[in-house]
Each structure stands twice: as structure tokens, then as C-alpha cells.
Image (tube, rainbow, N blue to C red; front, side):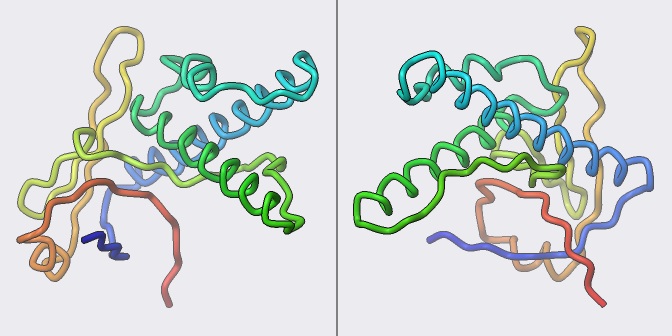
Length: 162
């Protein structure tokens, strides 16, 4: 069963800045995918770029975890497929085209660790060195809720609660 929760996350100012940077890098990946698609359609008489080509073109060049980059590409491909399906049904949905300044970063199961209440989010290799993970602390209520569940992914979505 799939379960989605929204929870608080406490971290140092430095780590919060890194998290904001991750979302900006994810937006850069998303914008690159849009640009690749646009160029490909121009050069290939309106054909779509393949999934494999998109994954290859975005591989190993961004400072976030490789699976986070893959997640951005997968979300784009899912949106493209959904729009294509909607159009086949006669709806007038538009394909995604707008560049983004920020985009939610996703960490898949083997790119993060939850140790007690500490959450560690891994980053990519940079200058042939492993970057230190981004650390944060989850509330006790969230840890209690997650105790018997297996986390598949974490997405970084900003929400200011008042």
C-alpha cells in the first residue's frame, strides 16, 4: 500500500541551504530535459526523444544523487505520457513547456538513510569525492508512524505552516 505523509524537518541553516540548492539543481535538470525535447523535435521532424536518450543526456553531470536526477526525468516522462493519453481522448491538454526555478528533489530508497530520528540524504560525487550527506531530524511522532513501514522515496517539498 502506498502512503504519503507530510512532516516537519529540522536541520542546520547550512543543510537547509543545501536542500534549497538541491531543488534548484532539480529545476536545472527539468529545464535541460525540456530543452533537449524541444531541440530533438526540431531536428527530427516532430518526433519525441526516447526515454533512454533523456536518461543518457542527464547522467553524471549534476551535483545531486543520480537517482534524484532520474526521478526528475521520470516525472517529465510521466507527464508527457499523461498528456498524450489525454489528447487521444480528445482533451486539449498542453505538453509541459515552461522552465522552472525550483523543482522538488526526490531521493529513492537506497539514496537516503533513517537512523533513529536522523535522516541522511545522499548527494552525488563531486571532484571524485563523496559529498557529505544532508542531515536532518524528524519529529518523534513521524518516527513512531514510520516504525513499521518501509520508505520507498522522499520528496523535498517546501510548505510554510503557520
